[in-house]
Length: 464
Image (cartoon, rainbow, N blue to C red; front, side, top):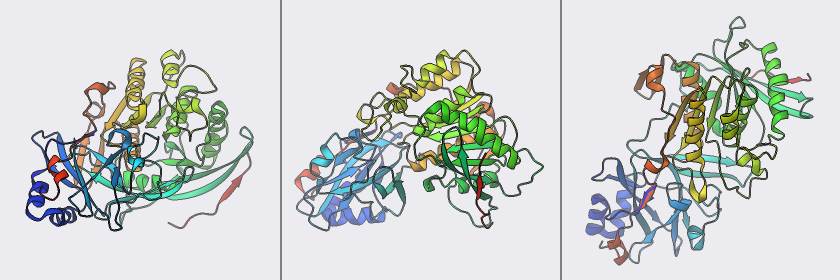
């Protein structure tokens, strides 16, 4: 996490000494956002957040999961309208942030979701061109965040449409489920060069229809980079509604997968199910209940937590429990007597865990249980919250590891990583006590005195 630095970075300090607030703002513009400087510890950086309040704000806060409580106040520089604060944080950090003018008590409050919910007055950093649109329709709509990427952050796979890359196609299915008693929208992706005579792996992505996944672009780029073999993917429109869980898994196994097998060239084994957040719990539960069908599972930021946000109606799902039972999914995997999935990928952000959450440590415990039960497991922990960028990255890493475990090439920009299965496997033991602190708040004390310091096919309606 972030902590206050004992001293501001030398570049920021020099700018303040020479030209005061105006010079610091100029340096922030040249840095295209927060000013990032090295520290004596190569594993950490000093990051100076700078915000110019144009409408006479009396206070400014920065909202980001890198801070304890997901928020921190900025200091006014002298009597100017410039607000700034310096923090030290891990050099591997990739995180989202926003500024909140006239923050007042809102930044210092301990209410859940100060970072994640789209507070109306919060805004992206106007100096930083790297932004991401978040769509939380189920909560309060769309909003824009800025992205801070420090020098040693792990590169992410390409998530943008690349000119010249062969692209796959999609078909929309309206599936009338007798088991669920309602319709389900499923978008089916099939890769470029798709041939009916092949047996493609099937990937089921829970809530994969949501635009922030950029699912088709990720799939196309994985195929183009030879990071995975071509596959067919089913993107299920669930809107976070998965109860009752056993009926939903039965729907997947008895209705959805047979329908896809009858219409598309997919194999009959080795299917993959993936999800993020609550969708990760659904994927893990499907792997537990139907390991023959879903022998490969990708769980991204599974929320094994002791507390339940007010926005979540079904607290049992939030805690990794189903149907009101006392055992969590972790305990169910530990106690299972039947077969389990063959391979499972667990991706989590190390900044998950604010406000009493135990998601990060519990993901490590989950991976350890899987390892002890003989499941081939990979645990990826990155210095981030599990936001949209990180979720997409973990999906790409998970698909590459599961679908092409023995030899794969993952091109990230100009970098190429060539790894074997042994190199890829990460020990499923994560000691949260050894993790670096988020951001050590490093407000320079001198500042307090002032500036001295292909076309789409038609939809299909299927009634099984």
